[in-house]
Amino acid sequence: MKTSEKTASILPAIDSALYDASLSLISKDSEESYLAQYCAQLGEDHSGEVQDISIEDINDDLYPLLDQHIPNGLKSVFRADNIAPAAILDGAEGRCAFTQIKLPLYWLNAPYNAGKRLAAELYRACGASGATLSAHGLRVSLSNMAEDTQSLAQFMLGLDAGYAALGIPSQAGSLHVRFDQGSFNVVHFGVGLFTDETKPLSPYFTAEDQHIYVLGREHGHLGLSAYLNDAHDAQEGDAPSVTFEQEIILTRFIAQMHELGYLTACQSVSIGGIGLALGKMGIGSAIGASVGGIGNASFWYGEDQGRYIVTIKTAEMAKFEVAAQKLGISLLEIGNSEEDRLSFNNQKVKLTDLG
Image (cartoon, rainbow, N blue to C red; front, side, top):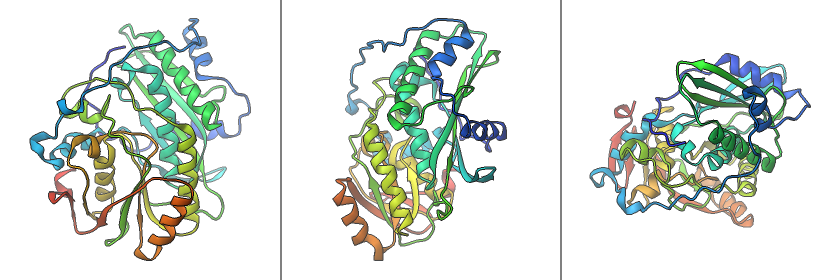
């Protein structure tokens, strides 16, 4: 399914109907794959085998920073975030974190890998708040146009593979397909639970003079990224690879560091890469950051999976770094939170210019 679109604006307030639906799935114990539910609702039989789609790697050199200016790229992708920040709510199961993601349709150019990525994104977005993902669901709206149902089946297959690896299978009733809608869209949502002792972790900078770290390995993956789509109007390459074992290790590490009181903020690195994650942390707090790194688009806007940005007080840095090294977790300190603007390699942009 070849699709091209400008990435949607930042999602509005949490959809209360989706939140209620996710809570209803927590207590269910009747597993049913997304693919099986999809086929049943369409009345079509799609193969459960992964289709071999050959996708060439892209040449990152063809997609440089706009005017060689890092903040210009951020301005292009700032409204590209389709992931709503985790909303902390009180439900029947206790305090929980609810997250919803509107699927960027250009991801479906590599449907199976898009499904795996979506599972990892929701898992990580929930984990960044300190909660443990407990249930998830999917809403698909099909327009009057003829969508490629086989590609969507491959997407469902990837989603099932992702959640099988994470050990959080879908439940019966977790998928709802709506027909003859005005437009085609896919919304994924989930709810995570906190332990009684766990306080929610802020997704935004909480104070100045905090040390900023990127957790997880960086390869600069620009294929099917918001930067390519929004800054260069290109939908090339494959989705970034996902290593679910690493996703689990990193998310558990975040929970452990939060329990020890080392973390002051945490944000999943997702759509828009490190650049957009820092922008979100700043806009939500009116606190900026001064950061440094490789001066190319793939470093700041690559969408490698299995990464978080965290902030740490100076007193906790040594203990935090030792704990990460023991688990073989990649760490990169990139700067500090400060002032009311973002500075990338001394190239500055005001937070007020991003909203």
